[in-house]
Amino acid sequence: GAGVSQSPSNKVTEKGKDVELRCDPISGHTALYWYRQRLGQGLEFLIYFQGNSAPDKSGLPSDRFSAERTGESVSTLTIQRTQQEDSAVYLCASSLRASGLYNEQFFGPGTRLTVL
Amino acid sequence: AQSVSQHNHHVILSEAASLELGCNYSYGGTVNLFWYVQYPGQHLQLLLKYFSGDPLVKGIKGFEAEFIKSKFSFNLRKPSVQWSDTAEYFCAVNPYNQGGKLIFGQGTELSVKP
Image 1: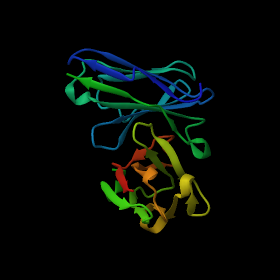
Image 2: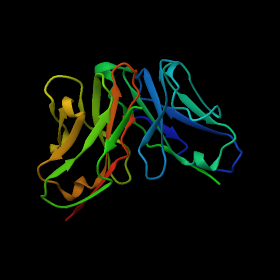
Image 3: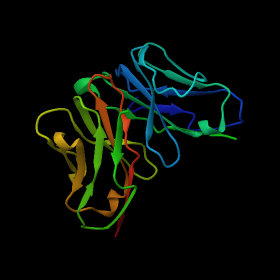
């Protein structure tokens, strides 16, 4: 597609439920990133993929968070047993490569997650 | 810990005023530097980037930024702002040996009065 797409655009869930957030990167982009933006704060790195491997998972806040990527396409971020502090906008980005000159990241519109 | 600091949370200017938004980072090695902008109701888009070479980089819509290595700074400037520049601006740093990871500042909201 023309840009990075994310679904759903909004998700309201109850505390304790699991949620899955989806990201479709720009075709041909081998690197994919997940970030989180809490209200009034900057973006917080969660994880990135180069192909379908994840060299850096250091930003995942707890073991309730996991992500996977199929080949060089779709990625899913899963949050298990959601908590109210998980409420945020989850942003996905993609780039041609994960380093150097090809690291210009293109962002999707985000998924706004609200945990009641 | 690595961090990016943006000096102002909210800046209010009148049209035609000059703009400078501060950005400092804490990382001693080589970095790539970015400014992203988020217009109301839109998603983040790249304003400009620095990888190497001339420390004064020019981006879209008349914006420019200067990398001063000795000050660990990458300040954003525009000589004359327009109402359409109203947006949130984010500075981001990519430490060279950490793959694609971007470390963002907390953002500066710019409001331009017509």
